[in-house]
Image (tube, rainbow, N blue to C red; front, side, top):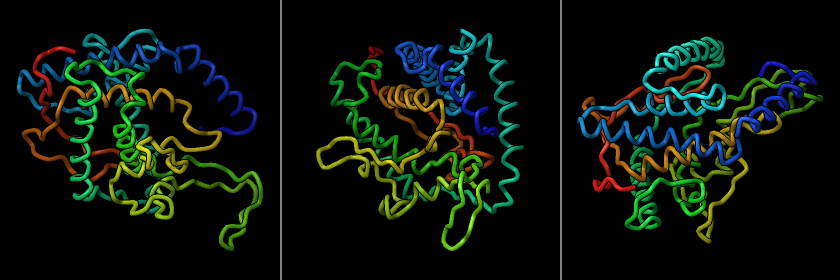
Length: 300
């Protein structure tokens, strides 16, 4: 992240090739994610049976971490290895907090999510349930990547969630490759800059009423998923996130199957906070929920 020139090109090429060798972008990647998806569903069914509150974010972290660990080291973070994941996550969180501290000088403020957006998201979840039910009929089963194109509203919902969640509001530092004049300011080649991704994804000339949660902005007049280039949660250009393909597959397989099998309601502590926490990335304040099966037959 902090190198440039020929050295960066070598590192980028190496990373891309190694990810391909490990199965990223191939059916093997989907199979690894589906293993974690099924394990996660089992955990949620157990929590429902016991009537326990569940920290969904923690369970999702383990699932995503296990996918990556399967590629790198050949094993997942089951109960016997969970302590390893906790140690790694703690180290990563501490690093992100330390790296994020200088950004406070830039007076960046992480605002909460307005309540009216939450209401729209809840109504959107009901539409996702409806879309999945109409697609699968009476035979509930695990959704795979072959189902993705059929679930247009879910994909639009995921896009709009990523746009408003905006977990990396400021890009990593870049440097100008030539002299630039921007609004009367003369910036010399080599000047350090930081792209404001948050400004792009809330630009009202591109996203009408940008702070309104509206998945339909990603659906065209023919009911097809519409591509909007300015949706850039994984950044843009040559330094675009190298793991984007893996992340997009995880989002679909994990989230779509969670909504396929469960409804989520507030835990004993009540509704979650609508404010974000911020270091280098922004994320929700930890909260607990309870799950309810949408199909008590137990069939898949």
